[in-house]
Image 1 (tube, helix red, strand yellow):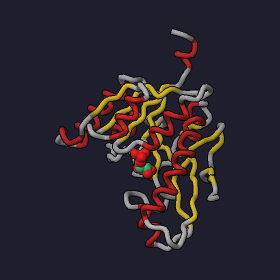
Image 2 (cartoon, rainbow, N blue to C red; image 1 turned 90 degrees about the vertical axis):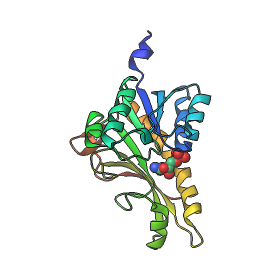
Image 3 (spheres, rainbow, N blue to C red; image 1 turned 120 degrees about the vertical axis):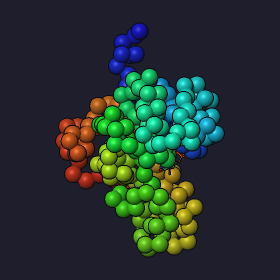
Image 4 (cartoon, rainbow, N blue to C red; image 1 turned 180 degrees about the vertical axis):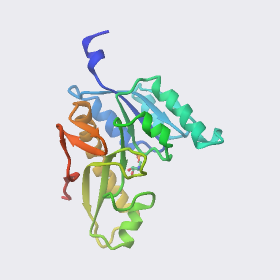
Length: 220
Ligand code: GRF
């Protein structure tokens, strides 16, 4: 084992779908100076394209199919066991579409990040793009936050905004937001791997100081 093996943060990514965010993270972590390595990708859907992306990148994958479990608790126990085999320093949810139990969230307290396609605290849950349009919002965007037991409610680290155009549909808006997601997640993951981000109590901290408001990448 080399010195680098001992110190390079181990990243496990959880996915459910197409995995475009996973691809952005794979690309970023493949850059020579990236301070972390994706050691495994876990998925709850055996047919998710994200698994194909991981395999093409030569990254180990595991699948825990939620349809084979009677309870959320049973699924989470099995998922946790698979994740722990890889001893992650950071657990990255990238389009992972399962609600996690409190026990699971506690097990990875302070090392679990999630990306959510809205400017939290607006629009937790699903259909965020349509809801932003229905509300007549002028801006929309994406948030990256620490995961706590509060669904989509953990401390927000960073956000990227997009302007909503009068002819935007939920689909065009989703595309604009996704482009920002692919920029923002690698930045935040880099900060975490560099040891610059912590969750202290229920407060996100950057370089040891509480983040009073999320850091924002403004709309173009
Ligand atoms: C993204 O919009 C993410 O914010 C949301 O699910 C979508 C996943 O897309 N949680 P992908 O699988 O990364 O392409």
